[in-house]
Length: 120
Image (cartoon, rainbow, N blue to C red; front, top):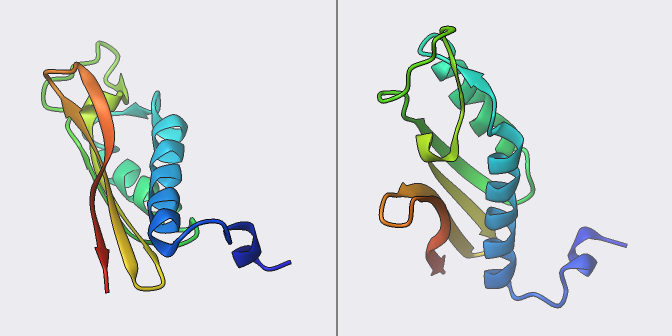
C-alpha cells in the first residue's frame, strides 16, 4: 500500500496542515528540556531544523531560541516552550501550510497555530 492510501480521506489542504502540525508537536515534545546555553544555541537550532525537515512534506523550518532572560546557575538552562519561536512550512502537492509556535504573554502559553494556508 502506498503512503497516499493512508491519507485518502484527507484533502491536500488538510494533509498539509496535518503534516506541519504533527511535526510541530514532535518538535515541541522532543526538544523541551534540552540543556542549552549561548555556546550551544546555534547547534541546537540547526539540529532542531534539520531533524524536523526530515519529516514527510516539510519544506522549511525556522527556529529562534530566546535565551536573553534566562540564567542558569550551572552555566545552562533547560529549553522551555516560552523560549521558542518556530515556523514550519509543509507542502502537499500545490498546498502550503504555515504552522507557527510562539509564546503568547496574555495566555502564558507557547501557542501552536495555523498561520496561513496557501493553495495554487
